[in-house]
Length: 193
Image (cartoon, rainbow, N blue to C red; front, side, top):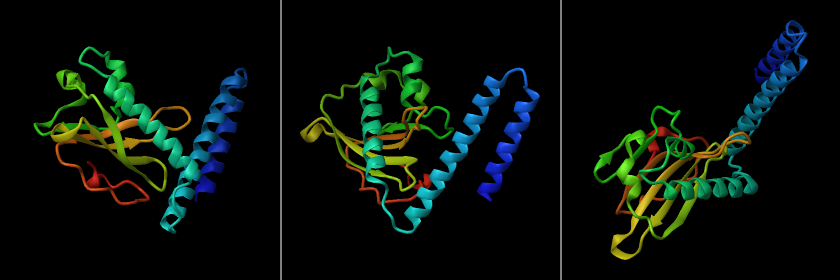
């Protein structure tokens, strides 16, 4: 089925190139994008199938995912109420309808975080992370502060591809450490933080 879709996309791309005869560079760029997206979809499907057979995520993918998660969380901890909207958009998956941020007081729309971003987060440490077998999502827990004042950040992250960076999908702050998320192949929104 996927080969049929890829073949159809390629035929469509060639047709567009013939129609755009006077702009071959644009057509070639579009063909490259279509072929690249098809290859990425095939790679994701292969990772998903391998995961369902019990094969763990590729160690290099896990390292890259963890580096990207660390980067997006550092960017989150750097946000303040004075941060421009583009900085917030660069950290959160604002294109997802269910992107969320919540603490003990309840959920706050990401676009209205404001003062919550000014709360100090002195010392933060990643406690653990679990990368999905398909390498499209990951779940992680960070601790912020020390002793009785420690807060725990349960975070669901959408991994970026070669064109985009990873972004926070769900972030929940609590005084109790969340349960360790189990290994998973594909993210189930019902189990989000």
